[in-house]
Length: 282
Image (cartoon, rainbow, N blue to C red):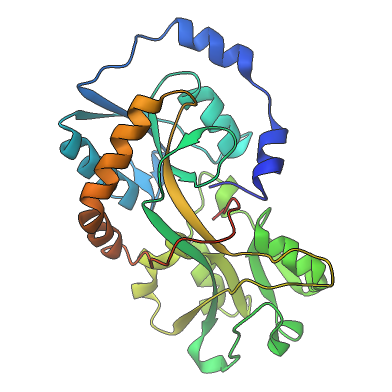
């Protein structure tokens, strides 16, 4: 996923020339094929074996559109992160759709959200920390784990908690698994982990000693904007590809119950559409 805010992500990279060159060498879109770019090794999102929830949603959507599903595999946890992944694949016309673009993205065009979720606190049940917000008293006395370059990191710095926190880098390491975030809590390396809930939902069944609480929106100081931790996730297409965007929106509306049921199989907790749109990582 992405880090920070839309403005930060958009400002990090500029890539019109490479995308234009690739476009000239790529065949035109095929209305009989749904070409999806996805990470080949990033469960629970996707893998080559089609075991991730984004794989399952992509297959559902392709079937509903009467199209054959084809993948272009590329890691978005390498150099340049997700922005580079979009530039070298979607913008370069190696595919036509990505399954995980935050609603409100400034780099690409996006469908209506097909799910909305949030960051969560993960703690051991036997610690009785009762953490329900970033301002909870316990946050000042325990080790805090978080994914680097995310909204929680910003809040941790604003609340002067950074000296008692440790950054994890799952979202930038192609060899890492979000399972490591849960294991850090299980092993007592951190007292609380703050992470994107869809990243760990499917693994929680293996950690019965852990509990989850949603991170609420909060204001961290006079004059500061409310920080939101809930995000709508869309399917992304290239800017200007309105025909495909409209077709996907129709499928999402028609197949939403089945999409929701598919996500539920991976314990992706669904929430109402958010007021605050940022870019989740991990």
